[in-house]
Length: 356
Ligand SMILES: Nc1ncnc2c1ncn2[C@@H]1O[C@H](COP(=O)(O)OP(=O)(O)OP(=O)(O)O)[C@@H](O)[C@H]1O
Ligand SMILES: CC(=O)N[C@H]1[C@@H]2OC[C@@H](O2)[C@@H](O)[C@@H]1O[C@H](C)C(=O)O
Image (cartoon, rainbow, N blue to C red):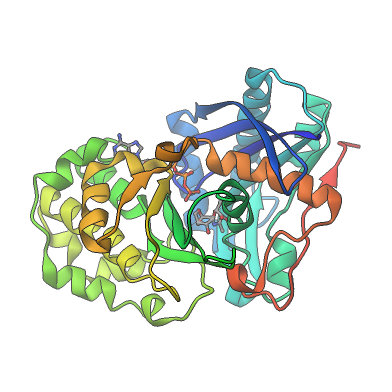
């Protein structure tokens, strides 16, 4: 059974997650160690700047080259720290731009250099084949969520709350519906950084001490994304303009945080499926925010639990996913499906480099 290491650098720009697993890309035979290497503040700042510049950034811009070199080095260190042999690495890279409607999705990272430094083949570029075939290029996690959830009662939902939030609904016959729901922690992280200097609102303390501004929330929820049918996906900065125009910036720090946490919750609550999930399992850093978790349980009216409730690891799940997908790339199995990305037929994707 192939052994694989998955590496994910998410939209929160907080660091790289790494996880080891044993899988044939269909079944998961064993989950091994995982870890997160947090980026230093300078790299975080530079990546954030690159996200803003991405629409007009040249691939040979020295700021990009420098950030990619440092980002790749963190990935090499993460693989070395895991200290487990593997047959293939799945390297998602950092999304700096995602505009599937314009045929563009851009993940950066030097896969060949990672292969050379680790001596292992590296699967990368997971999203562009789907976008080229007319899909959204995201989310790609549904096939992994379904493999993990094989024996769990359905219908159920797996929700990831990262910088952006995405959901996978799994029906009683295993059918999948997946899409990005809206903001995850991204707007609240930015708000927290601006008002308190902290990278995120730890344990939802700031949000808990404020009052939701219903007018601002209504304006935010009137964004056209929420009227768009699934499949749909988001760029980390897709709500930036709407947030600036919503009046949120005039709110006091605590009220703004409460309103942005409510925005994440409402956006998830607006998701609809053929049948109501009997429960929601939540992964990603947002599950550590009790204001978001309690708000979701109230809004959804069914149990909302961290994925640890069924024995999964909510911090490692996306990294595991890209290890799983790397094995699928090698086998030529589809990564995306009409009901997850809107691609016309199940689509294989990704490339493999040996570093030469
Ligand atoms: N104790 C906590 N209290 C509140 N929020 C937390 C806590 N711990 C983590 N978070 C949130 O989780 C975020 C990190 O989440 P995660 O690592 O899942 O993001 P990601 O992998 O970058 O995102 P994506 O899934 O969009 O790619 C932090 O930026 C923060 O907002
Ligand atoms: C373009 C991109 O990088 N999208 C990420 C992001 O982070 C969460 C959400 O937005 C999801 O669509 C996706 O990541 C997960 C791993 C996915 O593809 O399923």
